[in-house]
Image 1 (cartoon, rainbow, N blue to C red):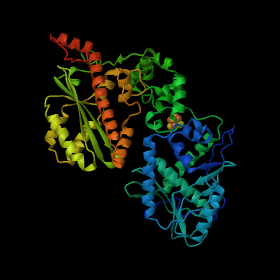
Image 2 (cartoon, protein in one colour; image 1 turned 90 degrees about the vertical axis):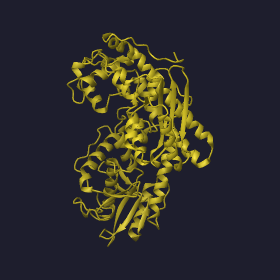
Image 3 (cartoon, protein in one colour; image 1 turned 30 degrees about the vertical axis):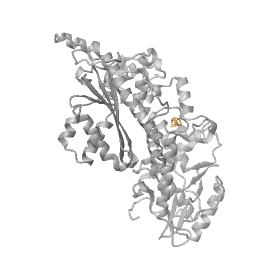
Image 4 (cartoon, helix red, strand yellow; image 1 turned 45 degrees about the horizontal axis):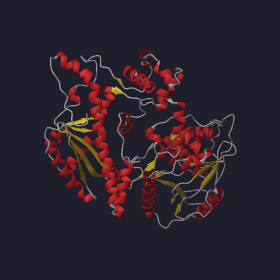
Length: 543
Ligand code: SF4
């Protein structure tokens, strides 16, 4: 713990639990909701990810929260395991005794331990009044660690450590770590030299407090302002952020009812603000907008403007709208070679557990376009040690069809094949040759067509073109949970669920690719006609 930062260095803040350093400008909501009495670090953390989440956590009806998914439960367990591992290195631990939620009692018990000068305090409660009247700031760092220095109690100070499961010191972690240091400075009368993050992988990351003070001040002020407002912050659905939130069902239902613009792919928070500033508040208004009007706005441009307007039009008419390429002779961005047809075609999907650095399944659907025969191959690693064997089996399978294009969805499969090649010493020329047969169906869809869907994830696209999964709740995160459950219990039913899900992903890719080829054919016919070519599509039984 030796990294240094210039500000704020060991500033005397006026004695133990002395008067608070007031941030210079605190925004006060004129119509205070005034229910909020305790602002915790947890609220501050969630506020940074979504303002509305912090508000709903304080005032929302808990019965409307979604139950945790298996994946969230797994993340919670992983977090507990990581925490236990870190805490092992700080024994013996002292812990203030207080009833859950009784912050005043927790703060008093913590002060007693700090005054005694115990070495390490686990789940300390630090409290100070906020500049907003009637609100107390509550900080609960995972650890307070005693260090040499001078505080209001004598020749020792405490430094806070927060334990986080993430591998990187994300800004929202750092702001909360700075918040711990800020509240601690009011309690012990002096700023700690550092606040720390104990991240996954064993690193102890020192926070540059001086760099974060202004950011913390700004976040804290806005958080208090929003939490004292009578109205929740505006809804904005972003699947990458909302899918793991326990208010998702609640917010999504509201967004669907309002036909909220955030449900359109490509409407980012920044673009949404510009649309609102230009009084484009509904899907219908966006559908009627001239692309030339939107294109000059920051973050738009011609391509984005056209895409967003098509997106709104597609949703209103429930139809697929082709994208245009004015430079192509057929006026369409996709070419036959983007989606090549062959006698045998492969549809490939990987299942992986990134937290274990493990690729546990290569699923390959082999389709003979002439006979219509479809065979699914599951090249499964039943344990970590089995990964190499599954990789070799995958290579044997794809080499058995040297002329077959390999269709996949998103870049992950190609990236993983490159990574596994390096991990197991497969010659680069073999990997390059294999990857030259890879075709990304997701890229072709997004390049070629606008669909009336909320997301260009495989599930959304495939469902719109008429394909559905056998297990409704199956997804990549659930597959990881099933794999862990298999490792723990040895129950093969979990493996079967994974294989079913993976096969359906391969079949969905097949279905989407076929749909896109048929959608593109009228444009390609123009190319064939221009070159005097007759073209007969290869089709199996599915037609
Ligand atoms: S679902 Fe999304 S918008 Fe709603 S509270 Fe959660 S993160 Fe915020």
